[in-house]
Image 1 (tube, one colour):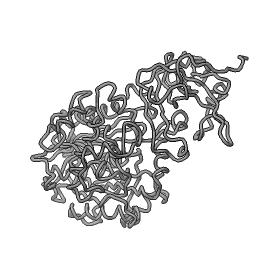
Image 2 (cartoon, chains in turn purple, green):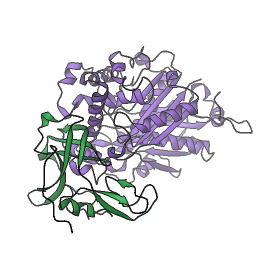
Image 3 (tube, helix red, strand yellow):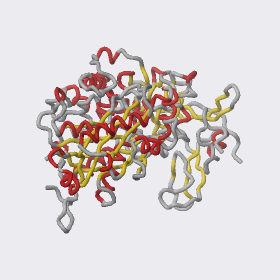
Image 4 (cartoon, one colour):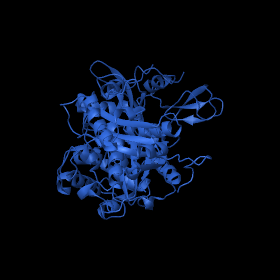
Length: 397
Length: 149
C-alpha cells in the first residue's frame, strides 16, 4: 500500500473510479452539447450500477469559447437532471477534462462530497476550422506572437523542427505515430476515424505547418465522456469494490504561456514536472506503467510525451515509435484507443476520454485492443502548447 | 495603446505601449527594471524579480540566431491571403527571444536553425492600415531610424 492513503483514525482515504461512459466522437451535427454529455453520463451511471440520486455533485470539463451556449455547465447540469446538486466548470484549454477529474478527487478527499460525476464535453463544430485556428493560435501570447498569425499546429511544428535539429527525428517517424494511432482507432467503435493509414499516405498529405502535414494533426470533433468517482468508504457501502480503479497519483504543472520564455523547445517542461509528481505520489516509476493514453494533438506531441514521461530517454522518441515500442507488446503501449489522432479531439472531453480508456484497459474490457495483464495505467493531458499538463496514475488491485 | 502594432492588434491596451512608438522610430526595445536592473524581452511593465513597476526602455541591437521556424500553410482567420508565410523564433544576442516573419532578404530555402539574423523594425503599409512590425533579415541589413530626442 502506498503511503498517505489513510488518516490517523485508520479510515481509507483513497479515491476510485466506479463508473465510466463515452459517447461516439465525430462531427455530431445530430446533437447539442448537453445531449452529447447525456450519452456519456447515462453510460457511466449504468456502468456503475447507480441510480441518479447517488450523485452528490458534478464537475464539467469544457472550454467555453468554442460553444455558442454561454456558461455551458448550467445547461448540462439541467439536462442531466442534476439540479439542485452543485456543479462547477474547469477550464485549462485541452486539459479541462483532467482538471475536472483533479477537482473531483479534491472534493471527495476533502470530505465535502462522496460521489462525483465528472463530465468532459465539447461541441467544436459550431465553429469553422479557420475560426478555430485563430482562437487556438491565441494560446500563444496575443501581444507578441498572435500578431504574426501563429497557429496551434504552427507551435507544435516549431517543436518538431527543433526536435529534428537536435535529435534527427524524421518526418517518417512522425508519420509512424499517426499510422499506429489509426491502426488502433480502426478497432475503437467510439473513434472518429476508424480506418488504417499507411506511412506513404501520411507523407503525401497536404502541408499544414512544416514539417507537419494533415495526417500529423488530430481533428476537431464533438463528443463527451464521463467518469464517476467516489471515496473508498462509500465504494465499500455501494459494493463496487471489485471493479474499482484507484486514482493513486496526480501531477499537475504549468509552463510559460509564451514559447519565448520556455527553457527549451524539444519537450514540455510542464509534462516532465507533472509526471514526476504523479509517479512520486503513486510510489512508482515510468517503467511500472503498463498502458498510457497521452496527448497526441500532433504526432510530435506523442514523441515528446514518450520522452517527457520517461518511457524512453530524451531524444529517443523517434526511435521508440520506429521500433514499435508503443504498440501492444512493446515497452509501453500508448494510445491503444487511437489517441486524439484517430478518436478526434473534443477538447473538454479529451482528458475524461483518456481516463475512460485507461480504466477499461485496467478492468480488462478492451477486447482485441486489450493490453494483457495491465494493472497500472497513466493519462497525460496537455493544455494549450504545454502551458498546463495533468498526469494521472490509475491502478487496479 | 499598441495602435501601430500587428496586423490584428489583439490586445492594444498595455503599459508597454511605448514599445510600438519606439518601433515606429526604428528602435527595438527591451524593458529594464529601474529598481533591480532586470532586463526583459518581450518588454514588461512589472518586474518579475523585485515586483517594481518602474521601468525604462533599453534599445537592443536586434542581432540573433534562429532557434526554430515553421512555414504556415493553413491560415488562421485574418491571415488567409498571406499564406504561406514563415515564422521563426530567434534567440536575441542581448536578452530574450522574439517571434517574427522572415523578410524579403532571406529566401525560404535558405532558412535554417542556427542561422544569424538581424531583426529589422519596419512598417507594413496595407490597404487601409499602417502597421509596425519587425522582420527577420540578413545580417548587415540597414534601416532608417528617427533621430534620438
